[in-house]
Image 1 (tube, rainbow, N blue to C red):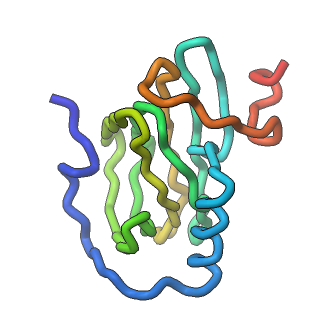
Image 2 (cartoon, rainbow, N blue to C red):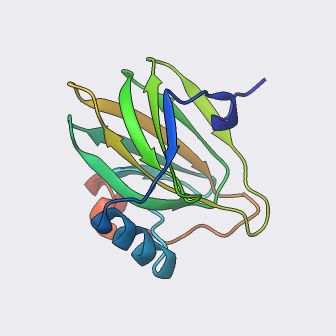
Length: 150
């Protein structure tokens, strides 16, 4: 059975006001949907998008929107914080090889960010399925690996 984020217990979860810069970024994403679910789009075919996330200690990937079915795998584990679209802030620990699967019906989505709270780089792979219930969001050329853009 494939595990989802609903199966993962947070180390900490709280509802409190976000810092103004985080709240403003969340509002911007609501107006201009960000489909960059990783730091680099490594590959894309007619069926999948393959992303990687590299986050140095203290680094953060901003708010982005998941609309496609996907799964992610933690390559090397770590400790991170996320601001979720329901206003909750959560902390999680990830172990190497940990994988979660997410599915979205028509019109469903998730918006969140991810910040590395640990003392070493965190690496994740994310695979999106383009034949999902929702249309893929566009991604700018700047996030595409040069070989993938060619």
